[in-house]
Structure formats: C-alpha cells, structure tokens
Length: 129
Image 1 (spheres, helix red, strand yellow):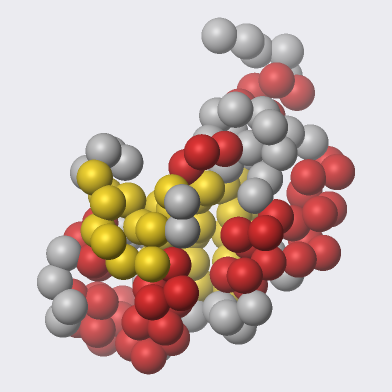
Image 2 (spheres, rainbow, N blue to C red):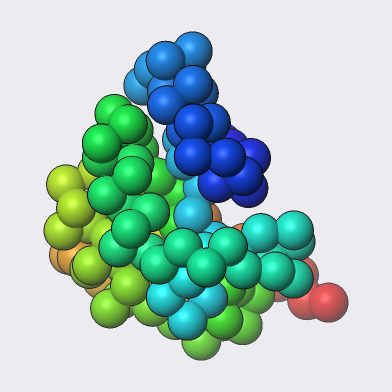
C-alpha cells in the first residue's frame, strides 16, 4: 500500500505500477474531495476525480481509500465518496468510520471489495480508549 509518494511526482505512479503491477494498492486519503498527504496535514490540490483518472491511466487496479473526516469517529462510512470511487471500475478497500456489519453491508452495496474496521473492530472486542 503506497500513498503520498505516488502523488509527489507525476511520473511516480507509473513507475510504481510498472514495478509492482497488481500488487500495488494506491492509497488515496481524501478530505473535502482532495487528496491529503504528510499525515493528513497538507493537501496535494489533486481532486479525487483527477486522482482516479491518473490511477486508471497508469494501470492501478486496487485502491485503499480513507475518508479522513470519518476516520476513527464511528460515524459511519462516507458512502457518497465510496460510491463515486467504486464507479471508476477500480477495486476499492474503504476506510474511515466503519462501525458494524450494517456499514460493511452498505459498503458492499456501493461496490467496495473490502473495508478497514479499526475502532469499530476494537469496540466489538469491548476495547475502548
């Protein structure tokens, strides 16, 4: 899974795809429709639609997409974001806000192949912090 380094230089994405092929999972950390980097402290200025097009053009097959505003909040996934990303035809693993089986089912309905359940998983185990 590679994130910010993919977006640091326009040629990097293609280089990584060439080297890793289908093993590459491109991480897109999204805030307000724009990719964020540097621990989510900065944005690239690259809109999610443009990033999706770059991934498609470079031959990326799988994405790990984090809805930053939802991450760790237990507020439910950003289904609008994931619906849009899944419409790209790329395989998508969703992250951010996933609480329970209902959220997992909703993500599957919009086309996600998987999800990261961080805080939600810990809550299932009775672990709080």
